[in-house]
Image 1 (cartoon, rainbow, N blue to C red):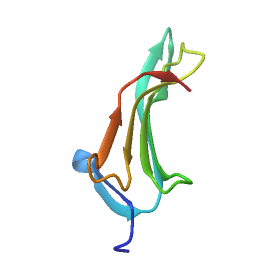
Image 2 (cartoon, helix red, strand yellow):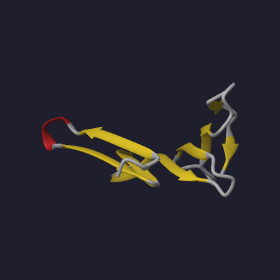
Image 3 (spheres, helix red, strand yellow):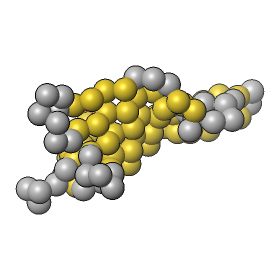
Length: 96
């Protein structure tokens, strides 16, 4: 799969690891949240990687919070065919 466009590596300490190359991926990172007497795993970080219709590769990083109505995209990283700027990083926050 040498023509893959994304790669993810995950090291989960003693519980194992994962490394994979692919054409698109999504990753959800959850953490334990306590709300009163209730404890639950909450997806706090989402990462989406995909190729757009204009053939750019895009990675979006989204932060989630149980008290928010909408999630917050905190970064968007693009790569394409522009040799002067092979990687564009947008750090403007956007509700999604």
